[in-house]
Image 1 (cartoon, helix red, strand yellow):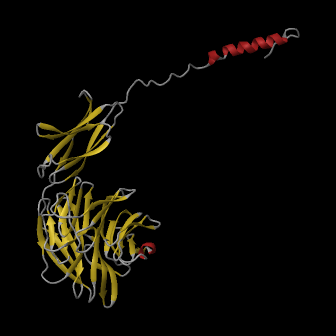
Image 2 (image 1 turned 135 degrees about the vertical axis):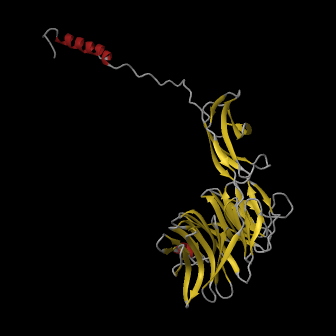
Image 3 (image 1 turned 120 degrees about the vertical axis):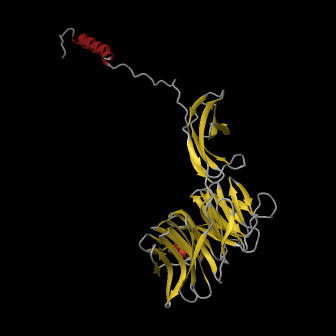
Length: 435
């Protein structure tokens, strides 16, 4: 409300205006204090068990590094004793340490404990992780009993096999019964059921409701029916298949040295060789894929590696007798994880912690497939019916054929071995059961 007289109205207006300006600041809240940045964040370190074999343990370590410089010490605990097995700067925020007791090997089937300490440059401990336990593997049995099943009529053959369990096993190829073609046969734990809507040379799956098969075409099973993918089917017969998901599938061509990728929408040629065929593909994830390119009866093979963005040559085979060298021909590759890879053909090799070894074991005939479930349960199969089992310590011949037939496909579970092939008269399913 304004109180104005004729003579002094203007003066009173200005007086009240400036009075209001003076009292307005006194009505404001106190200003917010700026954040206190003097308190430092606390650095932490954690450990987890990434893998264990018979003679090694891999430990993953994660740490923060808000207050450098700092160091990580990883300890192995055995009874009352603890030893530092690795020490490195804390600016490495996420890494894995491979412990094989400096090449001497850990004790088989033994419980080890690990923890990490984060220290400053003077050695003062800033944080200590909880202790984790890891038991090394034990050897497994190499004793199997065998059942040979004959299926179909003249010219029948089986080449691919994959299953989600021993009660859900598929075998693939071409089987003729009463002049009718069946490309897939399914075992449900009780009986074999025949399917005429699929067929192929190789198979890879993710679950009982997501299986991929390649041969003349490429097929996917959704738990109910098989679907043919025309974009992948029109590039010639295929001999190998692997993927990390249905949107990340690789196939190798049988009569052309090419590797194709399927991203769920389209196919892309990702690798091409002069004369080496991509006999096998294996991987651990979408960013760790291996493709084996080989020539029959030739020592010079190539192992390609895909890191999620680029393909490169991981290993070229060469002259025997040189440490770290492997020689061909090699026809199959199996990947357990980033630290453990097996390649087989004329000999059997393994790469542990980026170091290739082996080759001293020479099978009676070239290995055409190698598969496994763990470091102590690996199977290598020759076309002539010779089958070898690795129990984590030694390779052992566990099967030889009594009559003529050719084996082509291999799949391994914890307690069984599934092989498929053919002879002159019909298709063959060979099943080994661990005792």
